[in-house]
Image (cartoon, rainbow, N blue to C red):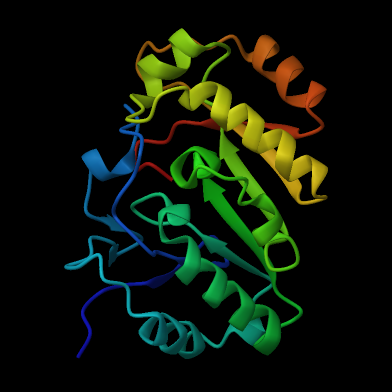
Length: 207
């Protein structure tokens, strides 16, 4: 029996957990606080992803009852790009009424050294991108990126998603300890790129 939780429910939506790897180590990341989200332990025992098991777990949640599926777990979902695309295509073919979203740090183009956004068009309806700070210094202090030029790369990813017509939201986490972010500056920059701005107040349980 597979013990990896690839699929879980949160706030009336289905979430898909593809990896525990990430190119950031954000100071507010829930992984540093707890092992589970609403009772589902999201730590995987292997990074060799079983796509058929993901589909099987997904089907067991009776997706016809839901309107949204979000690629988001204890890692950066775009690090499993090919598997993500395969699962997203499966969703669009089998459950065409469901909207798909990726919660991402926006570093996908830096990771793969190419523009991956056109590959998401048609299978991903929206993206939520962690903007995290009004400039590189604030972003780096909060996100602790492992990739060079992560901040500019994230902003370029936002622009590419907007250009491709993918609904794009950029988020700021507020209220975590004494980390101060200039919300107005973030909002101005995000909206100037054609994306939506969303503030995510920090919750003690991380979600």
